[in-house]
Length: 582
Image 1: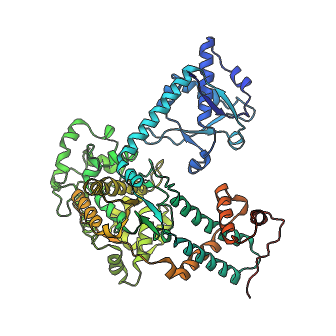
Image 2: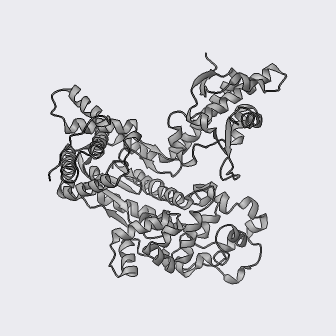
Image 3: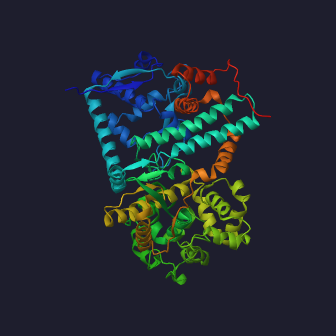
């Protein structure tokens, strides 16, 4: 049995010179240290989807020191001293570290120096049996941890696997009609614009590719450990394509939560959500890094404070009526748990014991979520002169945008801020935390997933075993005949859990063919406003281009001509003869 493993490391390093700097007398210790160096370098080697995965951190990857010390037998510091020595090469250190770091919030992050990161070269090395064994155990533990996370959503996965999910052949009539609309627009407005033509082919090719995946049962299900959303081929398809989804050969309907994210925010505005460490629906369980960032009970609360915390709790976790606080029980200048919390989280004026009993909290909790709040806000803020759709777009900015300048220029946000200043401050502070970018957005997604997938869909799965369904974040696709019972089940289970009325709606089902002109204009506007660069096409883009081009030219008499057509599109030396009607 082979007890060793092979890892990929940068080739463009003078390893002989590097390892000559190791001052260890014991040969076996030196070998293990060398293997530890190889192992760490393999972890930051920018292979596969590495650069895409860590694009938001500029290539820096978190390496947990506890895990790295287990892998290297407590040699991680030695490895770093060697690789991060600024004199180790003529170009400086081999490994660089991002200085952003916060215990229990974010690990230290590392990457190869810029030259190696952009041009590492590649070579494989075989690790000795001891290092290999530790690395294999590490991978097993990661796999087991991932398995434990996924098992929480096993009921969703099982429905995807057991439901017969297909797509109606009428979808190709829609795609063909959309292509004609885009080509007509191109002929009307542009001449000899190859970039426009390429983008049209890519868009059509992407639609066809998604349809083909569904037909071939390649649903690509996965759960994101970052936002806890359940993703699949279905969640990534255009809403127009969803119209054609069939389950067990039957027409479907999409059932979803009304005003989902604003509703989720309502469930967070309780002291229990922030202070409780045992409930599954708590900051501590759902987003522990954020809990450590803003609350950090290990430092803030002593045993006495923990014992006295009960007097600050509301009688019902999600009580929409009065919260039973006694303002006289709280010393605003003391070192109580809430005072300490105020200094780390919101302004002290907000975080006194009366915070959770603020009238604006009550007002927000009592918004008409059952019928949907966007029409309500349109009426209250703008006398219905602004559409509910526009209100919804602005509310998404309200909940997710961290750019204060942009927030201050959006009328809906300004109106919301005047009505709910504390809640707005709550959102802004959580979305601008150092080391946890967009923390509030992520918290909302995780809580939404908990309420909809782990509460609502789990109850549906347990109660109606024979009803097939597939999920789309805060929505669920079911056959039309089952939509009524599914809607009722979701509403009952979520309300029983949160004690706050929730609205469940059926998404309007309009055949995309009936509004093909409007869809064509929307798609066309996206294309012409897109900052397109032919030199930045990915392999997936080229794949979609080929599919779309072949679909348009499906009557060409040979595959060679189709291939030549695509090559000409990608070749700057060729003159595109894309005419237009004047």
